[in-house]
Amino acid sequence: MSIVMPVAVGVQFAHAAVQAIADAEGIDVLHIKGPALDTVLLVHKPSLGEAAGRRDSFDADVLVRPTQVNRLIRAMRSHGWSVRYRFEDGSNFGHASTLVHAHLAPVDLHRSFPGFGVTAGAAFASLWEDRMPITIAGVACSAPSRDAHRLILILHAVRSGDLLSEDIRRAWTEATPDERARISACAEVLGAEVALAAGTGALARFRHRRDYRLWQALATRQATRPRLWWAWVSAQPTARERARVGLRLIGPRLGRLRGSLGHRPSAADYVGALRVRVHNELDAARRAVAARAHK
Image (tube, rainbow, N blue to C red; front, top):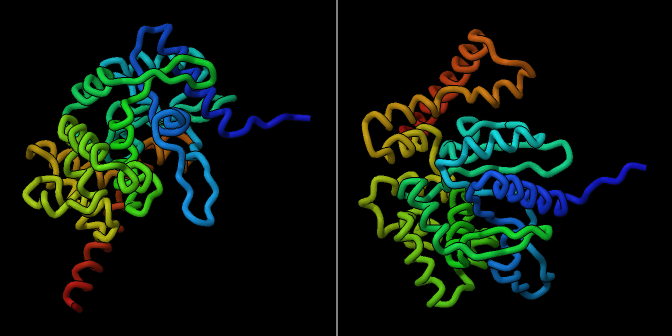
C-alpha cells in the first residue's frame, strides 16, 4: 500500500531541503510565508463561529540573495530538482521561478518580491540584516523580521487583488498602532509605500507616484486589460523599460506555451500564440472603447 505524504509535510521538507542545499553552497536564503509564519505571524484569532487555525500553503516560498540565484538553481538541479517555470514564465513581475521534485512540494524561488521599490539586492540586504531564526522540519532557517513578514503578506494579498484577505486582517487590521508604525517604516526602507497603501486604504495619498495606477489596478481588479497593460507600462522608470515591459506583456510565455503544447515550441507555434494574444488584446481594447462610448 502506497503512502501519500501530507501536503503540509511536503512543504516543510521542501523548505528544509532548500536550506540544506543553500548551507552546503554558502548561499543566503530567507523563508517566507507558509511554515515560516508559524512563529512570525500571530496565530489566527478566530472570530465568532470560526475555528482557530494556521495559514495553509501548497508550495515552499524562498527568497534568495539575487546574486546567488543561479548558483542555487544549479545546486538544486544537482539534487533532483527541475525548473517547471522560469522567472519569465511566471507573474508579470518576473519575480519567481518554480522548481519541482519527485518527492517534495514545489518551491517558488524568489529573486525579488512584488511591491518593493528598491533594487532586489538592496531589499534582500535589508531583510537579511533584520532576519530572525526559525526551525522548519528540524532544520535551522532564517525568515524576515515580524514586521517585514507582515508587510510581505499584505503586499502578496494586494498583488492578488484580495483586499479582504485574512492575511491583511491578521497582519494589519488587527495590528496595534505601534506595529502598524513599524510596518510602515519597513515599507519606507523597502520602497513599498504605494503597495502597502493599496492594501490599507491609503492609496489616494500616492496619486502623484508613477506606480499609483498599477497598484490601484492590481488591488481592485477593476481595470480592463488595456488599462492594466497601460498601468504596467506607465509604472516603468525609463522609456526602454516601458517598451520592454509592453512587449513582454503581449508576447506568450515560452515556458507556459511549452507546458500547454507538451513539447518545445517551434517558431510557428510562437507566432501562432502571439497572433492569438494580439487578437485577444485588440478585441479587449475594442470592447473597452465601445463600453466607454455607450456610457
